[in-house]
Length: 304
Length: 261
Image (cartoon, rainbow over all chains, first blue to last red; front, top):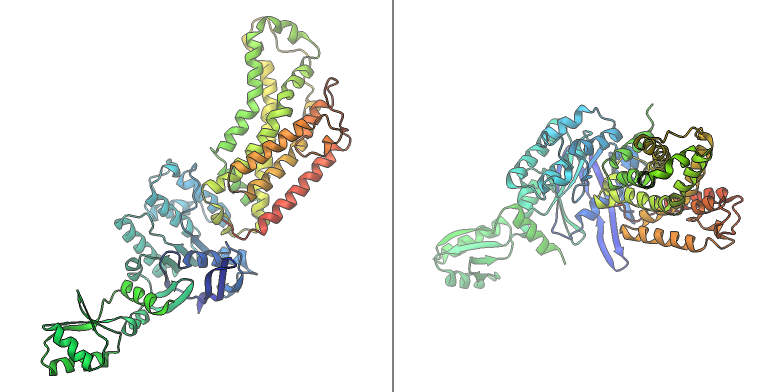
């Protein structure tokens, strides 16, 4: 069952400036959903719409099975969020910042110390937030988002400003939240390698269109249909001639021969043909297999 | 059951802790009494006669309120309101506020109530400052006892309440402007312009229609030498009317904003 669902979400900031085109997100309950896209793809606009921070123009948003239009306050009681840079009052301390929210969310005061310890800010009780580093502010923003043990955590680029160690800690924290408390996490990022390590589901957005949505495994399967095929041989000119005879549009690049995407049986057939013509094949297969490559291929193949 | 509004109010009250707006209220309220103390200590030779005057409190009250009614109250209302709203803008926090499980009306009213309470705090501190400005010179200058004349507490409190009502249109107008403009200078500039216009229009017979003029008109109405001919009858009803009008317009603008933070 979807924890968060949007249908035909469209948005434009100006009549001739469409930002989102029919976004249909479906974030399964209990998942860690990576919302991927390059800068300016429409991630933050989507998340702002989902939180009611921008007036919806078209489409529908439902969270926990309730419409955001009619149950906004009830929904927000169970949602924690961090959109872009953390919203923190710099003249107050970390504990005071959380005390503001603790009062509204009506959680015990002891929870403030708990979340500060969870994000590694337990020893900053007297320091004003204005004196915090960017990474510390980011941690505090996440502490604020999870203060009331939300059922859904919406994080927009949460690793911004964190050092590599901080990124690992953050990832472990989100994994623990998801596994131990069952929190559904919707996390946007353009740091694809970072997301790949802990998300269960992925949505890829580019120029306001959702290019892919599904499990991480399903995205990897997409690779087979969109990733170019790389070929390394002992005699590339001869291999190119064989491929041309077979009607395959192959090109010789500095990194080897590159062929258009094709399914595994076709790759096997090419390999056989090359060997039969006396070409020694060193390697053949889909070029690059990490999520970043798949993501770039998706953008390249499906976007206008 | 705990009130959601009370929680929102406490939350807003905590936000202003150590803020410029909070300090401005204290410094602004105690500025005139401090100047009076300094002047009286410099002119200490005249204090014995002054403190023996049966009209001591009325005279002190009038002289203290002169700068307040004309300048400090409008300025405090303009600056305090803008600074309180600016806390959200400067810290990029409106988006967090709007993502809280609070009705938009609650958010609007809680912040508005905090500004009003800050203004009330400003007046109370000023009144205490007036008493201090009488007491401190009597402590420091020998032969000058604390005035024998009783403090007309009820009259002072009534006057204070009237000035408080007078400043509410400015607070509401500045709240509307501060919510509308993210740039801090815009509400301050428009507010300052409103105050200058009100000051220039004091001799005008319809000055009582100007929302920034009421504290000045209230002070000047009892001053026979003042250059104002505006009728002050029903002036406080006008003030309340402006308050309601600006508050409703401010809320309408707030709730219909396309982007919240």
